[in-house]
Image (cartoon, rainbow, N blue to C red):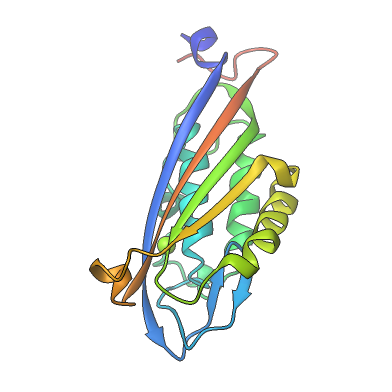
Length: 184
Ligand code: MG
């Protein structure tokens, strides 16, 4: 089974929602967005980075962001979510950490694709900066990182300006471990 786990490619998806409230800061993909509203959160509320972290963890079957960085832990209060992303990327290059039992493998990130649903403001002016920021933290080229934005045509909670919804998809390429870290 180890051989099966440690070969080939692995896909992951992540999803997150944060509520919007007047007067709070808005940060998406590590970029501060001028806006009258921002995200209600224990961390900096970067809902896009949270979805990305979950996609990366999901692809490696390493649990989810809430498992590794619980919002009940005061040390994560107000934390820059890029720090969490950096830790997740490190996990992909390390022996599988506690408390998750996973495959004996390390991973290269092939590409990531993120879709942000937000009614306003328009994110177009910030997309390039978002891609550069995420690529830099993950050690990737900008061409490996896609960030897309859409409104929901004023439908639903996103359309009413009550929250932001993000989906992330990633593809990992498995590097074969020199020897099994443990048997699966
Ligand atoms: Mg979140």
